[in-house]
Length: 172
Image 1 (spheres, helix red, strand yellow):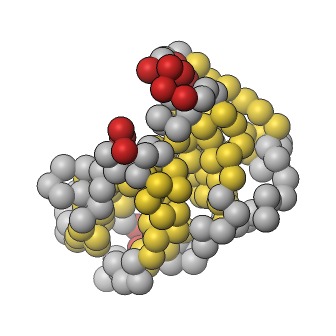
Image 2 (tube, helix red, strand yellow; image 1 turned 90 degrees about the vertical axis):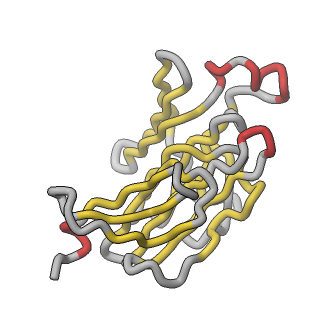
Image 3 (cartoon, helix red, strand yellow; image 1 turned 45 degrees about the vertical axis):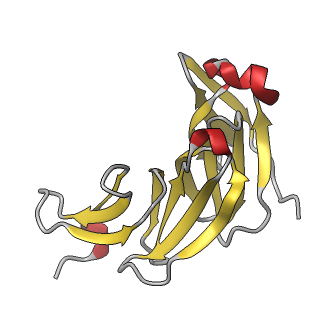
């Protein structure tokens, strides 16, 4: 039997939105979850036995969400409910600090929450309102965290990469 850390976990936005795993050579495809609403970002916590992913939803609707499932597909749980984030994209798991970080594209922000979905907060806001939303360079996409160095990095649509001091604590 293949151990979970020896598998690749893949999101598929088409075909009804699925999460599946394969061996590194592409063999032994196993569907873990179906019915995802345009999944985009994924983070795997092998130690805790969880897979987290973002659902972009319908971008004009402000109905994005984040979910979690056990490595075997059991215990599907909503972490950030629909509308708790506009259009979540890439996801970063910072397991030691117990946080998920993501870029919220049309929300024009970088956000984070506890692994159970509590303490959702906006860390960076690059624009506000419909006029700013039409300027795609305000859209936040990728995110990375350096907890040792104390920095948060994110990309915006276009050639922009930005850095900020990583806030400590939570809003709750």
